[in-house]
Image 1 (cartoon, helix red, strand yellow):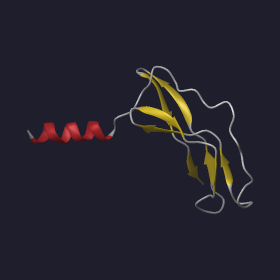
Image 2: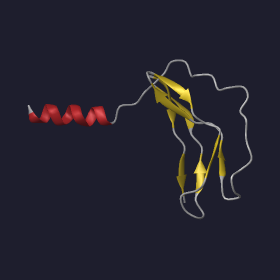
Image 3: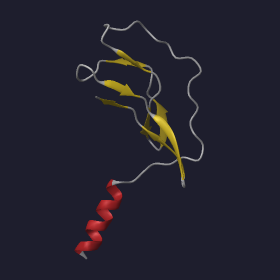
Image 4: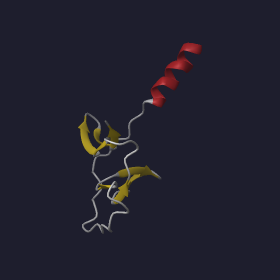
Length: 91
């Protein structure tokens, strides 16, 4: 019984959210002036909210550490459909 519980917890913690039809990106994104020269524009980003992907991009962010670059998110196609892999900061 314990092994079944541990296995189900492990599978639930690695769950991926797939969609058959990607959401449509807004046609116009307003880019305001950067708050500082250190800020980087994050162009496209999505988040899972209330059973669907919601646009969350179009914002300025400051790198967490000097010299770090932002690697933008992307849609990946898998055996069950498409899923959003969020962007991240890295050295």
